[in-house]
Amino acid sequence: MHNAHFDGSFGAWREIARSLLQRGIAPHQINWCDNPGSAGLFEQSNDSLESAPAAPAPRVPRQLLALLQSAACFRMEDRWSLLYRILWRVSLGDRSAMLAGDMDGSQLHKRLKAVRREAHHLHAFVRFHPRPDGTGGPQYVAWHEPAHDILASASGHFAERLGRSTWLIATPQDGVYWDGQQLHYQRPCPAEWQQLAQNPEDEGEALWLAYYGSTFNPARLNRSALETSLPVRFWKNLPEGPLIPQLMSQARAGAQRDGQAEGVARQPGKQIRQRAARGAAVSGNGDPDLPR
Image 1 (cartoon, rainbow, N blue to C red):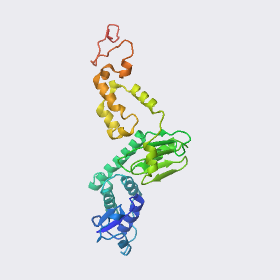
Image 2 (tube, helix red, strand yellow):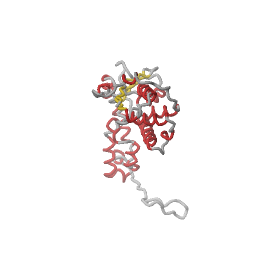
Image 3 (cartoon, rainbow, N blue to C red):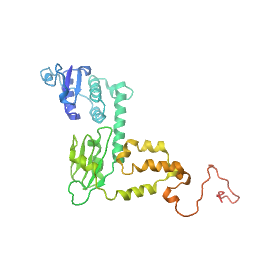
Image 4 (cartoon, rainbow, N blue to C red):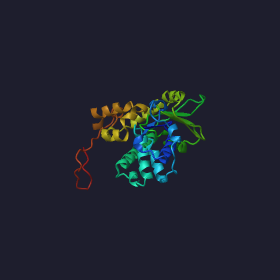
């Protein structure tokens, strides 16, 4: 068994995978280790590959390498072994390994879809907090907990939109800092970055919460749709997250019937209820029969 050690990056995996392919080492003969200290005492390491005879470098489609790089962001124990198995098959001429109808190809495309969705979640659910002037460092900070390793590839989205403003996104695994001109990626995430992101000094958060609560429409609440578009796992890191269960509870307790938030419903004025039936009666002049 060959123990393939690398630092967990796609670039390092690609170099080792190329060397393994040149030496004709099949997927079932490799144990991928992105933790260099986990090698067994009697297993072969990367050094043993250098003495093995090497064949010419295999030729594979450039499109395949792009797919493998994206799929490498999917967190799974077998992510590197699946990628090598697909690369091995394609290098032998079996391009069906790239297709969604293939057993390996199906797993590849499912992971690509999950990675794309997680990148969308990053763009949609990151909340930047402004930092007080004169404190130095980034002007905006955010904490996010993605399910997959998408920060490095997906954070350029914010660099294109925030211009020269400096910002920082920290996660439990890695972090990215935009200094106004260049993106700096760190893995693992420095402890000081994590501390900045998890303890923002945002003086305007109370105003945002008041705005969010006042614009919440209980009449349009659909819990399943809400949890599909805004997964519950992100609530804890959103400023408005703690408000959502409370607003949902108020909707079920009567606000949904009134079609108003509780604070608005207490205001003086005449209440006009809507008909429950889809088709309202029509009067002789062609106007709907409004409630009296």
